[in-house]
Image 1 (cartoon, one colour):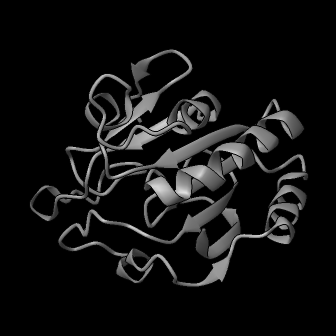
Image 2 (image 1 turned 90 degrees about the horizontal axis):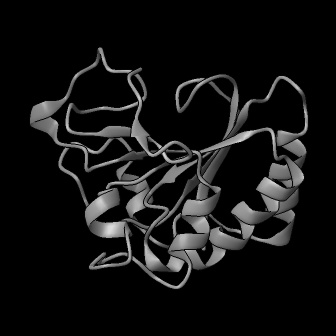
Length: 168
C-alpha cells in the first residue's frame, strides 16, 4: 500500500486533534474530489514498518485524540490488507484513542458481508477497529460547506461502536 501524506496535528478530519493518514488508491473518482492526486495507487510513499512506527509515535502525546484514515480510499481491497493489521496495532497500543475512517463506499451496501462489493477477508477486522465511519461518495451537486467533517449532504457520520448516526 502507498500513502500520500501523514498529518500529525489535524483538526479538520474528526473530533479533536488527530493524526491523519491519507492512503493512495481510489476507484470512486468522485466528480469534484479535492484529493484527486490520491486516486493513483502508486502515489506517494510505500507504507512500511517505519511508517507505522512514525504514526504510533505521533499518536502518543496526550493531546492527540486519535487516528483518522482517509485518502484515496481505505476500503479498496489492496489497502484493506495493510490497514486491518495496522488498525489492530493502533487499537492495542492506544485503546482510549478513537479511530475515524472516511470512505466513498456505503457502510450498509458496500462494506457489510451479505452483498458488500468491497467486503473482503479484512473488512470486518477494519470495521472492528473503527469508532466513527464517514461514508458515501462526495457528490458535487450536494456540496455543503456548513457541514462538519464531510463535504456533501449525502455523506453520513456513523458511530460504529453504538451503531447510530452522529449529528455533528
